[in-house]
Each structure stands twice: as structure tokens, then as C-alpha cells.
Length: 129
Image 1: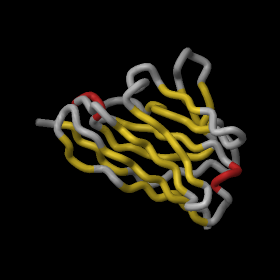
Image 2: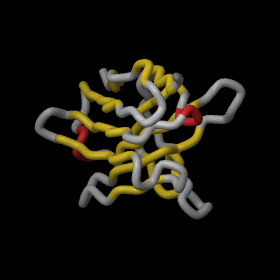
Image 3: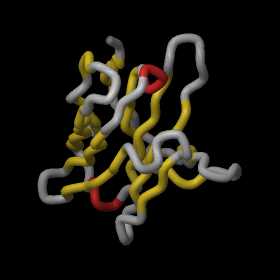
Image 4: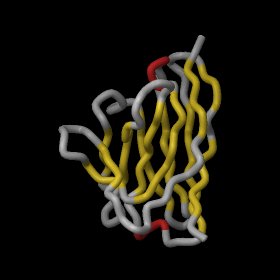
């Protein structure tokens, strides 16, 4: 059974840091580009960051570039999102998902529709004083 599970969310003050983890089971994580997406209340889901399967090329949307870092450890079947200098506007439910790619717009990130698309259940990140 293909499964992605996120962890590491929580409440943090502005300027603080969190590290999200996405662990995979039931499939070879190294075969997939893995992305982080987020959805804030009343807003559409947006891609935040993506790491490729072949050479670990990373992509970020403009609003998180320089603050967020995506990485993967295939031996642990995990992908991470280190989030520093957090802002209130980063508050959202964060999801990891397979098959991410750079989108058609500059610095956008999307999920490429395939039969094997998988999503985690999400983890809440709240940035507030």
C-alpha cells in the first residue's frame, strides 16, 4: 500500500523554525519527485517546493526561496522541509506528494497527474506570536 505520512508541524513564533518530515511506505521513494504543498484557510493549495528523483534538483516558489530547504534521504525513505524565518503568511496545512514538477508559471510548482499520484494527510503549521 502506497503511503506518505507527514510530521513535524506545530505552533511557532514569527522568525522561528520547523522541520517537516515526509516518510514513505509501499514504494521506492527514490523513483519519485517529491513536493511540499500547502493550503491556507480560504486559499487554494499551492506548491511550495519540489525535489527531483534523478539528481535532487530543487525548486522553490519565490515567497519561500532562501528560507525553506528541501532535502531527501532515500535510505530512510524520507523527504524533509526545513523552514526558517517563518512568517505568519506561512501558516497552512502542509502536504507532501509525489510527482511534483516546475509549473508553467515562473517559480510555480505543480503535481503532474499520473495514475500513481499520492498525497499525505497533512500537518498543520501555525506561525503566530
